[in-house]
Image 1 (spheres, rainbow, N blue to C red):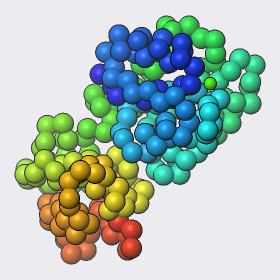
Image 2 (image 1 turned 30 degrees about the vertical axis):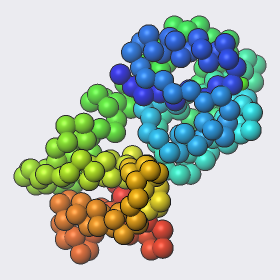
Image 3 (image 1 turned 90 degrees about the vertical axis):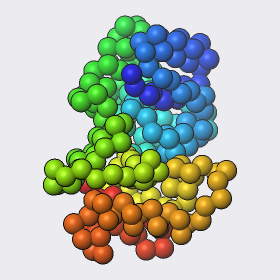
Length: 226
Ligand code: CA
């Protein structure tokens, strides 16, 4: 099962795709315009994005460009209109992984989706395992090891590390972490975030006083280097 973000403004297309993807066993989040779709993509984690080109407020091209700039590597399947050859070329250049031309058969689309997911998730899920040098973490199983020796982490520590891993090589602000790991409702401060990062570093870094995996980006937040 994969978590798929569908950004499509046409209600009939939206419903048809969602129903079929859910029938295939996937979890589907839907956005009906470009800007809310882009926000969802930047804030939540997905295994695949199905992205229409022509959208109100923000085009599919702008969304691909923005997501890739932010370091989001989620596979993107673009829906282009018939005869618009330029669309698919531009989409792929901007960082989309594949495209399907409208009108398309559902079977074809599902096949493309499954192919992309297989490529991205060869071991079941792209972002549920992290392997970095001598450190291995399985987020789904809440287990981690360094140099083959197991270490334990709290659920919250796993969540933070997973978020950094899913946004690896991009700067993640303390506010991003507060919003996405803790949620808005809880009253925690950015200091709390720093304390959690310290605990994670003590487990995964060779020398936590000179971190090489989770770097501090001064004045902003953190960046996981992979
Ligand atoms: Ca459209």
